[in-house]
Amino acid sequence: MITIKKAASLTGLSVKAIRHYESCGLMPEPERSGAGYRMYSESDIARLQQIRYFREMKFPLTDIAVLLDAPAEEIQTALIRQQAEVDRVLEEYKRAQMLLQSVLPEDIDAAALSAAPDVCRPAIVATDLQNDILEGGALACGRIHLILPQLRKLFAKARRMGVPVIYVCDRHYKNDPELQLWNNHMMAGSYGVQIIDEVKPAPGDSVVYKNRFNGFVNTTLDKTLRQMQINTVIMTGWRSDVCVAQTAIEAFYRGYRVAVADDGVNSTTEAEHRQGMKLLAINYNIDFYPCETILENLLQQE
Image (cartoon, rainbow, N blue to C red; front, side):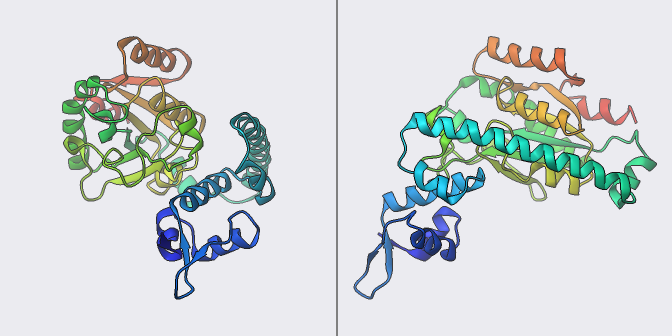
């Protein structure tokens, strides 16, 4: 049993939010210590984490109250319905954004871009390079070793050249909806969630956490890139047909130029790797270069 402050630390919620969920009936009345302090069990923590993730998906509390104890089929239906609602709201905001852009003067970032539209400002996006892919991990695959030596050299060169390296890492909590599809992996606080030592971050690198395949969903990746005035993302990491592909495609839709370090991405089988590469090559305006020359190839095209 742990205190409310410890529960808040473990779940990423505030003490105030936990008390609010109790007052709304989303959480049962907690047990009390001899001194009268709220005490929380492992099942309480799991329920709080589940509430947090439903809130991050913008479900109202009234819906969450039903979903917390709903069967898997009902949860899946609700997720599909919520996806449609989020898409609708996003379209409304996109229309509002277009209207605002049509009447407001260009901001500083837009002015800088228009003054030098052909200047390549790249950043490396390193996807899911985490210990759970190594031997003994929850998603172990020896093919990860095919890309680590090249990536270590590429990341070191990028740092010397002043090119940002941004790690986009899976991080999951118990009852995270994605865990219904996959075994528990990259669990928060575990060894498996940590970045592989061979390609570990250096001072000045950024780390962004995700709980979906797409590195832009529910993350700060886009904000991080915009703040750095990045217009070109260099995709590296694991898996080329899933998280790398979905993040690259989202970057394309968000207006970034996308390049792939073709010997710096891979997947669980050669067929899956090739499937991902083919998808990106055929349908999107994506450049492919080896790790050794990708930075020079992109920067020399300015």
